[in-house]
Length: 445
Image 1 (cartoon, one colour):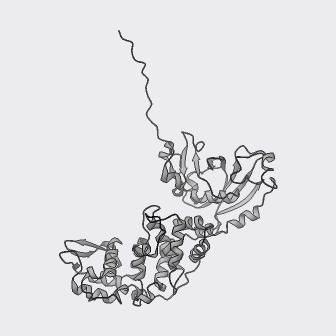
Image 2 (cartoon, helix red, strand yellow):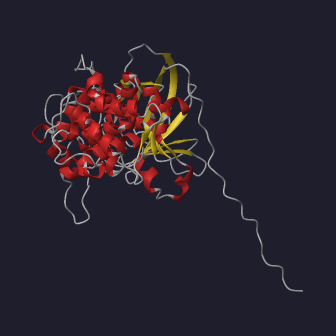
Image 3 (cartoon, rainbow, N blue to C red):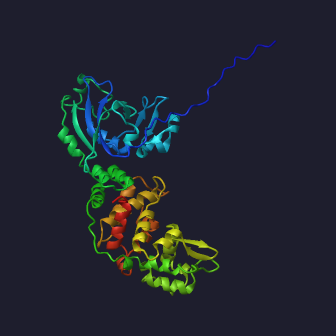
């Protein structure tokens, strides 16, 4: 009889556990003690943190609290260390996008996880790893749950001891080692650290500005023209600077299409374009068509009009069916209701996809639009910032203004105007366009 093969049962792969708690219904303040593991003497901070903040914001708080520069990757974990098989992982954007570690398949984006989903009762612990090389491992332990005032800040450094090791020092954790790289290892300055929570990143987050824009401002802060972007973004904070806008006049082009499609829709030609009579009438109300050369009786010859009409379809206000443009449900709701139309447009200006050129370019265009009412759009500044973000044409050239002209947001904002758009003032920003951009970037405002 032949020997039986040496067989063994291979266990099936097991998904990481879901250790998250339900979100709290009420916002409270978590008093949390955060310490660097293995530091001797201990290096720690006691922080008051809003329970509803997401972990990407907690990461930035920890960077301030320990004087780090956000120059390396990071991750959070529950139930164990950041690379333990039984831990639940909360990943930074790079790890979400690149998935270089096989065990990260079950990881959750830190940006979509709230602090109160990881800490619930005193004694609960959350782990944080910063810099996979120097390997700074921190433990956040919930000490106390406190009531939150209406205007409580996002984060406060309450107490702590000793200076934190600087970035890229090689995981030095003892006082003797740190004395070689920092002047005073015993120095702890809570007042200075708390002042840093007044930096633009935290101000913009507290104001409810689109997180994607806040991350761009943070990423570009030390780059050329980063200050220009920061100043423009900070105009989104506080009361609306523009009042008394006549929205019906500024949205005349939008309303014309919604009114025209109300009863039976807008018939199209066999080729799928507006009929000549409708082209002629639409050209009278679409601002970008004011000084367009030609007879303006064929939509294929009226590029700005064609772009605008197709934009209304992509924005979900019109739909094409059986050779006719009909109102969508959203279009029917917005027809005759300016406030609903403004709200719908604001919610559709920024693409929903990930970190693409269109998303970043749109965020930058909206930011400078919001800050430029009555002035001209600083297109060279926007293209220079896109170049700083690493965008290049296939041949290696940096982005030009023409790349911005092809964005859907360009046509939307250009045609939010109560005046004809001429070649001489094509780059002018109307007060209504600035207000619409602001609303798109501050949806909670």
